[in-house]
Amino acid sequence: MFYRGCDKRAERIGAGTVVSEDMNRMRVSDAERDQAAEVLRDAAAEGRITFDELDERLDAAYAARTYADLEPVTSDLPTGARAPAGQTPATAGGRPPERGDGGDALVVHSQGSVIVRKGRWRVPHRVEVYNKHGITRLDFRGAALTSAVVEVHIDTSFGMGDLVLPEGSTAEVDVDSSWFGALRSKVDSLRGPSHPHFVITGTCQGGSLQVRHKRPFSWTGPGGLGG
Image (cartoon, rainbow, N blue to C red; front, top):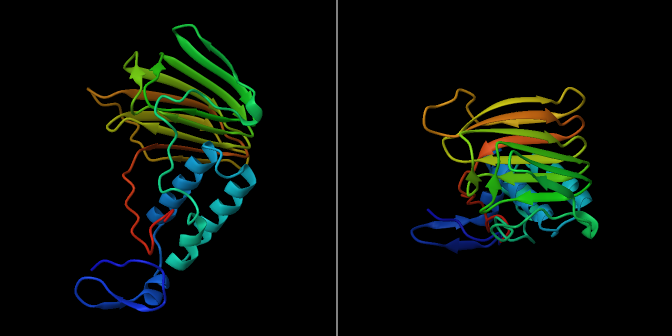
Protein backbone atom coordinates (compact mmCIF):
# COMPACT_ATOMS: atom_id res chain seq x y z
CA MET A 1 0.00 0.00 0.00
CA PHE A 2 1.30 3.48 -0.90
CA TYR A 3 0.98 6.47 1.40
CA ARG A 4 0.98 10.03 0.06
CA GLY A 5 0.82 13.47 1.58
CA CYS A 6 0.61 14.75 5.15
CA ASP A 7 -3.05 15.79 5.22
CA LYS A 8 -5.05 14.61 8.20
CA ARG A 9 -7.98 13.63 6.02
CA ALA A 10 -8.30 10.05 4.83
CA GLU A 11 -7.19 9.37 1.25
CA ARG A 12 -7.91 6.37 -0.94
CA ILE A 13 -4.78 5.37 -2.82
CA GLY A 14 -4.95 2.04 -4.55
CA ALA A 15 -6.79 -0.54 -2.49
CA GLY A 16 -8.02 0.49 0.93
CA THR A 17 -8.27 3.75 2.86
CA VAL A 18 -5.50 5.08 5.09
CA VAL A 19 -5.45 7.92 7.57
CA SER A 20 -2.37 10.08 7.04
CA GLU A 21 -2.38 11.22 10.64
CA ASP A 22 -1.77 7.64 11.71
CA MET A 23 1.24 7.43 9.38
CA ASN A 24 2.63 10.67 10.81
CA ARG A 25 2.70 9.04 14.24
CA MET A 26 4.73 6.06 13.04
CA ARG A 27 8.34 5.80 14.23
CA VAL A 28 11.23 6.52 11.86
CA SER A 29 14.34 4.36 11.58
CA ASP A 30 18.02 5.22 11.99
CA ALA A 31 18.47 4.77 8.24
CA GLU A 32 15.78 7.37 7.54
CA ARG A 33 17.41 9.83 9.95
CA ASP A 34 20.74 9.27 8.15
CA GLN A 35 19.12 9.91 4.78
CA ALA A 36 17.61 13.16 6.04
CA ALA A 37 21.04 14.20 7.36
CA GLU A 38 22.57 13.51 3.94
CA VAL A 39 20.05 15.82 2.26
CA LEU A 40 20.92 18.53 4.80
CA ARG A 41 24.68 18.19 4.27
CA ASP A 42 24.25 18.39 0.50
CA ALA A 43 22.11 21.50 0.91
CA ALA A 44 24.75 23.16 3.09
CA ALA A 45 27.48 22.29 0.59
CA GLU A 46 25.45 24.05 -2.12
CA GLY A 47 24.77 27.13 0.02
CA ARG A 48 21.05 26.48 0.40
CA ILE A 49 21.27 26.64 4.20
CA THR A 50 23.84 28.18 6.54
CA PHE A 51 26.15 26.30 8.91
CA ASP A 52 23.98 27.39 11.86
CA GLU A 53 20.86 26.08 10.11
CA LEU A 54 22.66 22.83 9.31
CA ASP A 55 23.51 22.30 12.99
CA GLU A 56 19.94 23.04 14.07
CA ARG A 57 18.38 20.78 11.45
CA LEU A 58 20.80 17.92 12.09
CA ASP A 59 19.89 18.06 15.77
CA ALA A 60 16.21 17.96 14.84
CA ALA A 61 16.72 15.10 12.36
CA TYR A 62 18.55 12.86 14.82
CA ALA A 63 16.08 13.71 17.58
CA ALA A 64 13.06 12.89 15.37
CA ARG A 65 10.91 10.03 16.61
CA THR A 66 8.09 10.05 14.07
CA TYR A 67 7.55 10.96 10.42
CA ALA A 68 5.78 14.11 11.60
CA ASP A 69 8.99 15.14 13.39
CA LEU A 70 11.31 14.33 10.48
CA GLU A 71 9.40 15.61 7.45
CA PRO A 72 9.62 19.38 8.24
CA VAL A 73 13.42 19.20 8.56
CA THR A 74 13.86 18.93 4.78
CA SER A 75 10.46 20.03 3.46
CA ASP A 76 11.90 23.21 1.86
CA LEU A 77 14.89 21.47 0.23
CA PRO A 78 15.25 19.53 -3.03
CA THR A 79 15.44 15.80 -2.36
CA GLY A 80 19.04 14.69 -2.69
CA ALA A 81 20.32 18.16 -3.61
CA ARG A 82 23.39 17.83 -5.81
CA ALA A 83 26.05 20.15 -7.14
CA PRO A 84 26.93 19.94 -10.87
CA ALA A 85 29.17 17.00 -11.75
CA GLY A 86 32.86 17.80 -11.80
CA GLN A 87 32.52 20.88 -9.58
CA THR A 88 35.81 22.16 -8.23
CA PRO A 89 36.17 23.08 -4.55
CA ALA A 90 33.89 25.92 -3.49
CA THR A 91 34.53 28.09 -0.47
CA ALA A 92 32.51 30.35 1.77
CA GLY A 93 33.02 34.08 1.37
CA GLY A 94 34.24 33.74 -2.22
CA ARG A 95 37.87 33.10 -1.29
CA PRO A 96 39.43 30.13 -3.11
CA PRO A 97 41.49 27.68 -1.08
CA GLU A 98 45.16 27.16 -1.78
CA ARG A 99 45.58 24.11 -3.99
CA GLY A 100 48.61 22.27 -5.18
CA ASP A 101 48.52 19.26 -7.49
CA GLY A 102 52.03 18.09 -8.21
CA GLY A 103 50.95 14.73 -9.60
CA ASP A 104 51.75 12.73 -6.48
CA ALA A 105 49.61 14.73 -4.05
CA LEU A 106 46.61 17.03 -4.09
CA VAL A 107 46.75 19.43 -1.14
CA VAL A 108 43.94 21.79 -0.15
CA HIS A 109 44.42 24.35 2.65
CA SER A 110 41.42 26.32 3.88
CA GLN A 111 39.44 27.13 7.02
CA GLY A 112 35.73 27.50 7.63
CA SER A 113 34.98 26.79 3.98
CA VAL A 114 32.74 24.44 2.02
CA ILE A 115 34.97 22.16 -0.04
CA VAL A 116 33.35 19.75 -2.50
CA ARG A 117 34.97 17.40 -4.99
CA LYS A 118 32.68 15.13 -7.00
CA GLY A 119 31.96 13.94 -10.50
CA ARG A 120 34.97 13.45 -12.78
CA TRP A 121 38.15 14.58 -11.04
CA ARG A 122 41.70 13.28 -10.97
CA VAL A 123 42.76 11.61 -7.73
CA PRO A 124 46.53 11.23 -7.23
CA HIS A 125 48.09 8.72 -4.87
CA ARG A 126 47.67 11.11 -1.92
CA VAL A 127 45.00 13.69 -1.09
CA GLU A 128 45.34 16.12 1.82
CA VAL A 129 42.55 18.45 2.94
CA TYR A 130 42.87 20.85 5.87
CA ASN A 131 39.59 22.62 6.57
CA LYS A 132 38.94 23.27 10.26
CA HIS A 133 35.51 24.74 11.11
CA GLY A 134 34.28 23.91 7.61
CA ILE A 135 32.43 21.28 5.59
CA THR A 136 34.41 18.88 3.40
CA ARG A 137 32.85 16.38 1.02
CA LEU A 138 34.99 14.18 -1.22
CA ASP A 139 33.04 11.88 -3.54
CA PHE A 140 35.36 9.37 -5.21
CA ARG A 141 32.69 7.40 -7.11
CA GLY A 142 33.15 9.13 -10.47
CA ALA A 143 36.78 10.09 -9.95
CA ALA A 144 39.78 8.92 -12.00
CA LEU A 145 41.94 7.08 -9.47
CA THR A 146 45.61 6.99 -10.48
CA SER A 147 46.59 4.19 -8.09
CA ALA A 148 45.00 1.14 -6.52
CA VAL A 149 45.71 2.51 -3.03
CA VAL A 150 44.72 6.09 -2.24
CA GLU A 151 45.97 7.89 0.85
CA VAL A 152 43.61 10.52 2.25
CA HIS A 153 44.67 12.81 5.09
CA ILE A 154 41.89 15.08 6.32
CA ASP A 155 41.43 17.61 9.10
CA THR A 156 37.78 18.35 9.85
CA SER A 157 38.25 19.51 13.43
CA PHE A 158 35.26 21.56 14.64
CA GLY A 159 33.64 20.92 11.26
CA MET A 160 32.11 18.11 9.20
CA GLY A 161 33.63 15.67 6.75
CA ASP A 162 32.02 13.18 4.38
CA LEU A 163 34.01 10.71 2.26
CA VAL A 164 31.98 8.74 -0.30
CA LEU A 165 33.93 5.79 -1.72
CA PRO A 166 33.32 3.70 -4.84
CA GLU A 167 31.12 0.65 -4.36
CA GLY A 168 33.19 -2.38 -3.36
CA SER A 169 36.19 -0.36 -2.21
CA THR A 170 37.68 -0.80 1.26
CA ALA A 171 39.22 1.64 3.73
CA GLU A 172 41.62 1.55 6.64
CA VAL A 173 40.59 4.44 8.86
CA ASP A 174 42.89 5.88 11.53
CA VAL A 175 41.56 9.33 12.44
CA ASP A 176 41.95 11.05 15.80
CA SER A 177 38.52 11.87 17.23
CA SER A 178 39.58 11.69 20.87
CA TRP A 179 38.43 15.21 21.87
CA PHE A 180 34.63 15.27 21.46
CA GLY A 181 34.86 14.06 17.88
CA ALA A 182 32.52 11.73 16.01
CA LEU A 183 34.04 9.21 13.61
CA ARG A 184 31.78 6.85 11.67
CA SER A 185 32.90 4.33 9.06
CA LYS A 186 30.55 1.99 7.20
CA VAL A 187 33.27 0.56 4.95
CA ASP A 188 35.10 -2.76 5.32
CA SER A 189 38.76 -2.39 6.26
CA LEU A 190 40.00 -5.69 4.78
CA ARG A 191 41.46 -5.01 1.36
CA GLY A 192 40.03 -6.97 -1.57
CA PRO A 193 41.88 -8.16 -4.67
CA SER A 194 40.12 -6.14 -7.37
CA HIS A 195 38.78 -2.93 -5.80
CA PRO A 196 40.42 0.34 -4.72
CA HIS A 197 41.69 0.60 -1.17
CA PHE A 198 41.81 3.84 0.84
CA VAL A 199 44.09 4.64 3.76
CA ILE A 200 42.43 7.47 5.67
CA THR A 201 44.23 9.42 8.40
CA GLY A 202 43.81 12.79 10.05
CA THR A 203 41.82 14.38 12.84
CA CYS A 204 38.23 15.39 13.57
CA GLN A 205 38.54 16.63 17.14
CA GLY A 206 35.42 18.55 18.07
CA GLY A 207 33.98 17.68 14.67
CA SER A 208 32.68 14.74 12.68
CA LEU A 209 33.82 12.51 9.85
CA GLN A 210 31.83 9.88 7.97
CA VAL A 211 33.32 7.29 5.58
CA ARG A 212 30.76 5.40 3.52
CA HIS A 213 29.51 4.01 0.26
CA LYS A 214 26.64 5.82 -1.38
CA ARG A 215 23.21 4.33 -0.73
CA PRO A 216 20.33 5.03 -3.13
CA PHE A 217 17.85 7.50 -1.71
CA SER A 218 14.70 5.57 -0.79
CA TRP A 219 12.93 7.34 2.08
CA THR A 220 9.20 6.91 1.58
CA GLY A 221 7.64 8.74 4.51
CA PRO A 222 4.73 11.16 4.07
CA GLY A 223 5.52 13.60 1.30
CA GLY A 224 9.09 12.32 0.97
CA LEU A 225 12.17 14.26 2.04
CA GLY A 226 12.34 17.62 0.45
CA GLY A 227 8.85 17.33 -1.06
